[in-house]
Amino acid sequence: MSVQEVLPLGGLAAERSGQFRADHLLVAGMVKPGSKVLDVGCGDGNLLQLLETRGIDGRGIELSREGVNRCVAKGLAVVQGDADTDLVNYPDDTFDYVILSQTLQATRQPKVVLENLLRIGRRAIVSFPNFGFWKMRLQLLVGGHMPRTENLPASWYDTANIHFCTIKDFVELCDAIHVKMERAEALDLYGRPLRLRMPWWVWNLFGEQGVFLLTRGGGK
Amino acid sequence: MVGVKAIPSPAISADERSHEVDHPSSPVAHFGADQPLRLDCGIDLTPFQIAYQTYGELNAARSNAVLICHALTGDQHVANVHPVTGKPGWWETLVGPGRPIDPSQYFIICTNVIGGCMGSTGPASINPATGKVWGLDFPVITIPDMVRAQAMLIDRLGIDTLFAVIGGSMGGMQVLQWTAAYPARVFSALAIACSTRHSAQNIAFHELGRQAVMADPDWHSGGYADHGIHPHRGLAVARMAAHITYLSDAALHRKFGRRMQDRELPTFSFDADFQVESYLRYQGSSFVERFDANSYLYLTRAMDYFDIAADHGGVLAKAFVGIQTRFCVVSFTSDWLFPTSESRALVHALNASSARVSFAEIETDRGHDAFLLDVPEFFDISRAFLQSAGKARGLTTRDG
Image 1 (cartoon, helix red, strand yellow):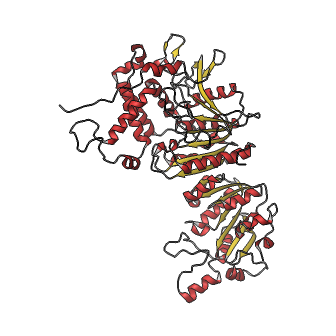
Image 2: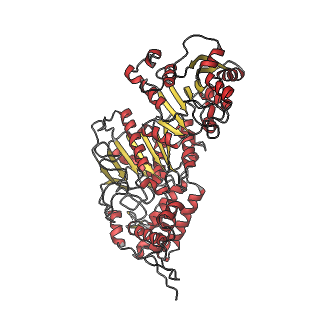
Image 3: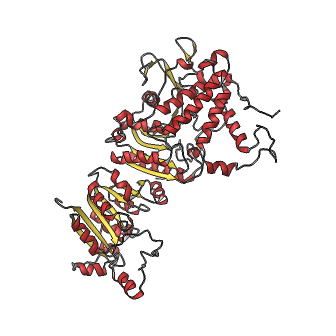
């Protein structure tokens, strides 16, 4: 099964979608065309470029200077900054969507970051590696060492990921801070969504990463 | 006796320099009594003139005009041989055929600022009321005054909206002032190594430079023109001190270290034993060949007074509310005169105003001066920013 079959994206030629990451295609599909988006931790700007092809006004924040400069050299509106310290500088309701792609586990205060995402954006799209994925569990259970995977190859002593969580943990955090989940997807090892509606525990075991479309819950 | 050598006298005479003040080799726009320049100090400056250079052609839609704003000691000769020094244009690394700001794509304008000494009205110009050089009778000017004068020239050139306003250091201050004062007239803004307000440390360095000029007996309380001399020693010392602030410890160490100048051993004198001394003396003496001492006082003062937030109730973000201009802000890691933190404060204010902004900090050990030097990463970013803005503006670029 190809990525294109899984994720038909309006406005994007099938032959072009191959150049984008599966989770990026999934995220882009959650964003309404014509909206205003902030990508926090935008890396090399690949997701922003994908969003631009869909007529979305995208801005980015990136921690690494090299990443920022590559983005700016692509003509993207990206600033050097830190999700932990710089989101507070954005006023409320600045964006339609704020995206945090594979970055939540690297922040110092994931809860505060998540709250900020939904303060400056009306919706947030958050993706993260699921530490409850069976391969992770197996490495800890059988191997007795901190898990390392294709997507997370760093050793415990030099990883930037300081706040790993499972899909279950994340869902509990959303409940605790009254964040509503509009849409949830779990991706398998190959970045393909688990297609069937399955109970959370299955996702928590077989999802390699989780992607959530979040909105503010009513009242605290 | 201990050997002492003063800073060498300039090779170019004061007459050669002052000729450019009133009879510049650049085109000049004259503004008569019907078009005074309203200065922040409350005075109407009239008549006045602006000397400027242009490169490239204005397109039929008048949509490809780029205004380049020069730094403290720059001038309008951004990409042509300088008429006094015979040296190449001061920003030929960035402006010229095949460069990020290419005259085959853009109509490039660069003006000498009001208060300058290369043909725009300033303290070295003749005061028409007295027939003598203005000197300290010239009113104190500000960065907003410079920009107001530029806007009058842009009006006269028949240009409504500038495609881009670009500048570094004091030029970057003018860029930011353009966006704050005329947001609808600036499609994109490239502000390099600058700040929205001059810091206490920078004001302190400027005061040092001004006191060096004023301490030179040849300054004559600003009236040196009447004595037919120029306080070149004081101005050279001011330039030497300022030049140190444009570099970095690492760059000075890399370039000069503790190496000796044309000798093996110390001479046990106050001669320029070290290469770094010799270099600074050269910087000082070559500067005074082309720059007027009073002009230096006025322009440093203009930078000192610059504070965009103060003009907007103390809240910087208010200066940019609702702005549609596309911004690119660039800083350099080793710039301690306009450090990255200053650019970051600007970016935060632009974010708070929801402006479209890119911000890149470039790693270099070359200090503040990096914006004038060959820094490929800076050129790549400038080029990409202008191309992406050009696409949004509907300008066709050579590569698509």
